[in-house]
Image (tube, rainbow, N blue to C red; front, side, top):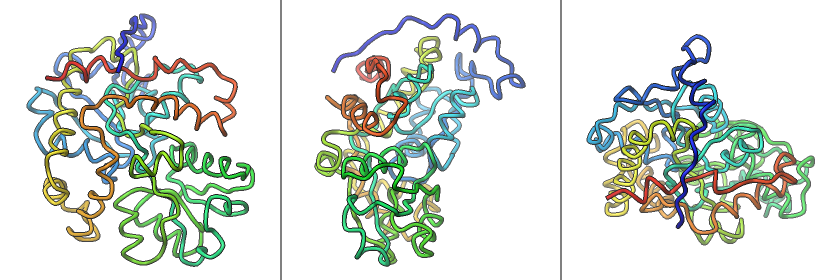
Length: 342
């Protein structure tokens, strides 16, 4: 896959250098020259973002001489806001935000692509299972998403449009993930919704819902979205990347090392490395959630072929901001750093 270099955004870099903690909500220049790097994760306990905490638990950040603080925000859209405001230097979240941000005048790029599928699952409550048998039946329904403007919101709208349902005929409801999502299903606050593991596995174990669309595997992504859908990634402001290449290379080294480790270990071995409180449904159920989601991850951090094009097609199907916009996909990701990992 191609790599590409970008000219430093001098004005943006100068602004970041001058920006004070009080003025910008955070010090965007921290992380350079050995300082602490803050990475916001769109839900640290979600299996789709597992490489973030796993990299820390395996000691790979430390091995690279990095001081990384992992923060959590249940919806990726809030994590992106933290990045743009300068509160954090990186986000582990969905790649599709880089396209959405570009048309809004923000230059953000994926520097490590952790996955080649979305890892998302559309589930339907048992109570609504007879009336919602596919996304064609979404009209008039309340559909759960992690947050409005999040990637689950994006993908829910795409599934609706692809199946002939206008976006104004569905009602997205922000219900987060985990127990809040499960409770919303049980209380009929939503009839269906999009979530990830371990929530999916817990829903099936509690028998409160059923799988409607499964996008945890390349095959499921191809069927639902028409191609690979690169999702979980480490993305950062392009200006920060260009000004801190040595640090970004160390981050890429750590994350790719983790992806390789995951590829060579069992779900049970991976689960044993994670914080105990992530396995709220028990160790066996948590390992099963990891097993179901493992197919989504890359082993090298490289953007999958045709992945950005699939994401662009999906977003343009329903997002008025992108529909007629020119998106330069080459500016939404780089393979410069992962290709240099030894």
